[in-house]
Length: 110
Image (cartoon, rainbow, N blue to C red):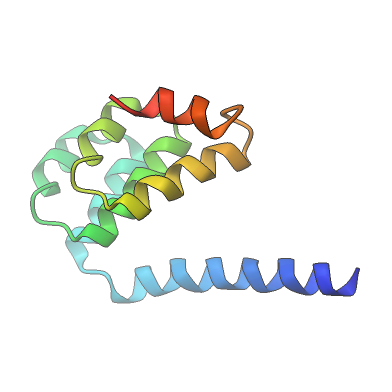
């Protein structure tokens, strides 16, 4: 039981550190891009889309999936890595927003 608590705590710490690392080391454009996706701001999104890093796209696609913003999700998908796309799908599955992996892939694959 103690091991499970320790494992859960370490995973939480890792996710917090990766978010903090993104905030510390990302460029201003990357931060503004992720913020635009989080807020659903299409104008800022379209202005910054071509200049941001792939890491920012991976983070943004996960946020768009979580917020169920399908328009932005499909616009980000070509720039996101396969790993970022898979992470977004797993995020939905963990939250119970999709029943199975196949169901999620059917929703998000065009």
